Image (cartoon, rainbow, N blue to C red; front, side, top):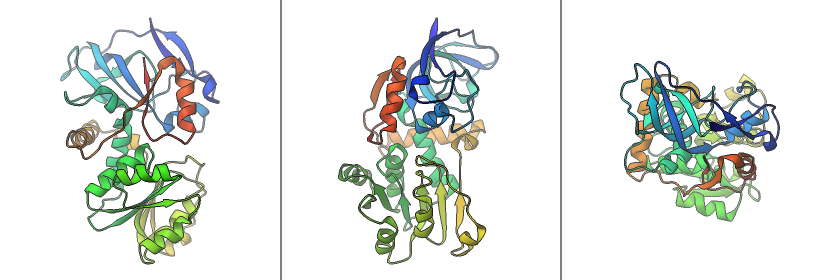
Length: 325
């Protein structure tokens, strides 16, 4: 019998309970996966709490993992028993489990020279970075960007890739330790937002012009300031809300500087299988070439998913978190 974390009521981390669950044989176009590592993301916290109404109760959360194919259903091509695969999905979810059935269109084969734990802890974040830098706002060498939470899971990878692209990166961080993490990731200028006004600092660093693109995953606490820090004809990308949802923005506010604002959701960009696999190939290659690097993950047994959520929510993390079945 396989096991999974089942959420029966939305709430704090204590609603994450390990239960025995049946897993059937794969049907047409499906794979049965024995999972090896499961990524833990802020998206999972929003789902578990009910902030995102995207999990039907009772349900199994989790949107990324790696695992080994145990069996394939009829009509599956390009995969065989024993292949190590990874996936990002949601909704529906279901990654917080020892075994699962997965639509083969969601699976990508992990290259032999990449570790399953590296992939499980970073694929969703790396795909997010690929989306942000190449699809939502196309960056060009010489541009200046502002990245909030630059030492966080997405922020760190975003700094690495943007710096590789020849972009000047300004990042906000919460401590000197996180400033060192962001700098090591390629961030050219760090702003300690607890003691420095990031709007003033961006203005100073850009000689009053502002950032061409602002990447804001914090939401309510930073969004008004992010608008102020964006250059004329610039682009503000809100892709998270760790501090709460953003209030509506008046079109006249955008018109003051001819700004554009985006609120992308990664899963919408992954709906087309060909695009999804091309994006995955791109980020795998970035890891293989050393353009993207990641710290060794902190791991928790699957049964301790609640502890992992509390750890992520503490705001002190600078490395990926994984559940290990």
